[in-house]
Each structure stands twice: as structure tokens, then as C-alpha cells.
Amino acid sequence: MATRKPGTSARPTGGTKSRDKGTRGGRPEASATTGTTGQQQGKQPARPARPGNGQPRAAGQAQRGRTAPVAATVAKESALAATPAWLVWTTWILSLAGLADSIWLTIVHYNTSVTLACPATGTINCEKVITSPQSIVFGIPVAVLGLAFYVFLAVVNSPWGWRMTWPPVRWARVGSMVVGIVFVLYLVYTELFTIRSICLWCTSVHVITFALFVLIMFSAAAGYGTAKDPALA
Image 1 (spheres, one colour):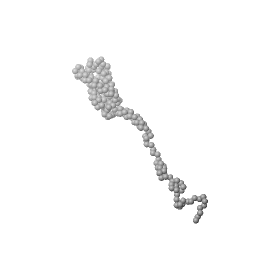
Image 2 (cartoon, rainbow, N blue to C red):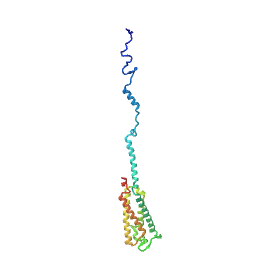
Image 3 (tube, rainbow, N blue to C red):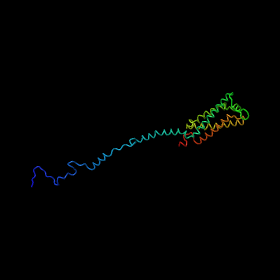
Image 4 (spheres, rainbow, N blue to C red):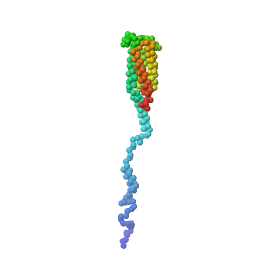
């Protein structure tokens, strides 16, 4: 029977293979939970911030607010596109033709030596009409009134004039044509029943005025030349 030396402790029963619970070779084992968490933290990189996540919503609203005036400006500038090109150019060409005719009649009125290139006999007699007492209204020659009228039309019926969506411009265009057609009817009546002669130059102005009256009334009914065009709605 073996004897123990003093100061030595007895070895635990169970053999040398017995180890303390939770240790491995004298070192503590990392818990499964801790290891898993560490692996997850090591494998999962930080998510990149989405565009706009770091920006406050107010920044996006401010961006949209800056684009609103630009859209409004584009809508206003497209008023010319909403008006048919044929209408714009037709009214402008007619206005320029009426302006040229009015300039010629004004020159003839103040310079009698200018040749009218118009028959002076029978029913057609330009000189008789231009020199008649009815050729002056309210102390102003009719030719001068026509000149001022067509200067205005050449401006408001130009492509730049049709771009203007200011309501007074539209109403001035329509109102001037109403006054113009009434004055034309008066002049035609005067030529036929008072002077009893017809001036070809004056008749050409009358025809141009009537054509412009029809076109301008059509444009007003369709809503062209305004910011409330159907194409802009």
C-alpha cells in the first residue's frame, strides 16, 4: 500500500482526461453566443447611407421649390407655340401689308404730285376719293388714322406681340379690330353712297382689315395669345 507524502494533495478521481467544465487546456472557452455575435459583427460591414438619407426633407422640398418658377416660365414662353404658326405669320404679314398701303396713302394725301397709278374716270377714281371732304375725319386725314392703326397692328400681331400673355394686350388687339371694322364699314358706305366713287388703294386696306378682323376674332374665341391656353392647361 502506497503512502502519500506530506504536503501533496490527492488527485481527483476520474483519470487525467477530466477537465474543468468550460475550460480547454486551462483556458476559458468563448461562449457560443459571444462568438456568433463577434462573427456577425466582423462579417457585416456598415451599410452605406442612401442618397438623401442624410439630408433633411426640407432640402428636397427646397429643390422642388426652385424648379417650380422654372416650370412656370417655360409654360409662359410656350404661349407662342400654343398659337398656330400660320395664324401668327398671317396676321403679321397682313398687318405689314396694311401698313405699307397706309404709308402710301399718307404720302399721296400730302403730296399731290405723286402718281396714284389708279384710274381717274368712271366709278373707280382714287383721286376723287382721297381729295374729297370725307377724307378728313375730326380734322385728321383718314390716311393718317389708317397709318397709326396699322403701326399698332404690326406690333401686336408680330411674333413677339403674340408671345405677350398680358390680358390688356389681348383686349387691345381685339378692341382695335372692332373699331377698325366699324370704321371700314363707314368708309365703304361713304364711297358708295356719298362720293359715288371707289378708291382701289382704299379698298385694298378695307379687305386687309376685314381679313384681320376674322382672324383676330377667331384667335380670341380659341383663347390664343393668353396664359390660359388649352395647350397650357
